[in-house]
Image 1 (spheres, rainbow, N blue to C red):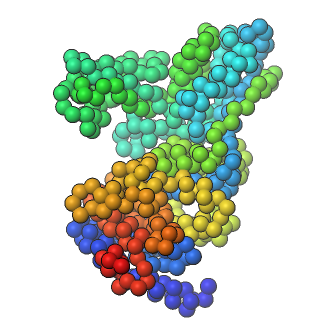
Image 2 (image 1 turned 30 degrees about the vertical axis):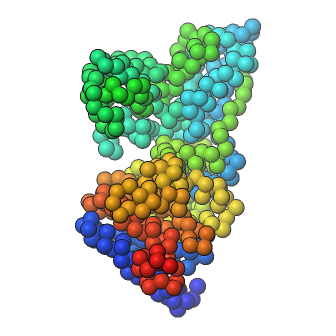
Image 3 (image 1 turned 180 degrees about the horizontal axis):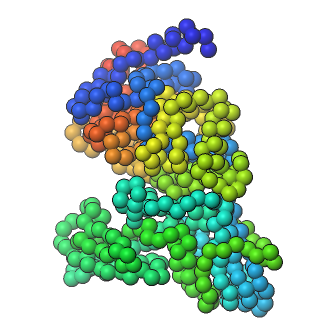
Length: 477
């Protein structure tokens, strides 16, 4: 584009933030120098550009880059395969040898789908395994990381470590039942070598925010539960990231195999198929279009990390590494002509202090996406504001002067200490969609909800006939 034409387009946008947005930021004590905004039509015409070239920590908004790269590179129907090998003789329902589960980077191997995989083994005639169950994670070549290194909360599911063979996002279920005189607790499934110490006390308080009233910590090999749980809560479940991926798979295998009537007296350990092993079956993941929905609607960090790694293996060959994942996304962006000079990648999930991107770069990516065959799958992966996923309870008109914006936008949010971000698509007055990116990196970012609401409302209501930046005038038309 000629320089003068580019300047004309930039000048047609509002260089200043809409007045309601600027006012809300000022009330929150957030300088506009810590803000990046880009609101654009799908044809690329900018409506608001402010701090759009600054580099921001996007938090989970980075998942938009990872999921779009995966959908466009691999295709929405792509699946990831878990292979099952028999290293021994199967006769009359008894496997005299080892069973090998070889991970292929399936991010969607929930406990239900792992049950289906094991049920397939039973249907194929395996009743008893007289050898070991080997877990092959060789598709990834990544080092184990301290799950508490990011924020000293190692048991939180968002800190789960990726692995080529991962079950239920590497979590177990802590099942709780609050009675009048005590609180019952159990792990489902139990982890070998982990003992549960239940110090929870019953209470008569309400059940709102029940999870904040209790704590769980792993004291060497003892899971210690402390706090209170109201008898009004009844039965509850809490997902915990308790063990390594291999130990987690071993726990789920033992529990589900027994439930299916299977017998196994050997060990569950890491290993690979031997030279004489034969392939029994391949178990497909859900299609990538559905996996992307889980990643974005529920902001699943470990799934996003696995897609990042899988992209590296798909382009540069196995085993997958973090470096290959970064190279793959940068190569894809270059091929699409999407220059992102401020982009910093670490793991593709946004659970990072290092990752960076500018509002202009992300807006350009979202505009580009709207013209691609995968647009509908990609857009459908974003949670509808006020209706589902991480946006289910947001912008629903709660509080004085708040507006109900339910169903008017499809946005990915991203939150870390000092960061509150939004990006996605907003419904325009003519029934079309617009691109919105709003980055805030500041110690007071946690107070930015009203500013986010103001920009979302403005972006959905603005027309060219309204005074520049005046959302109130727009809303009166």
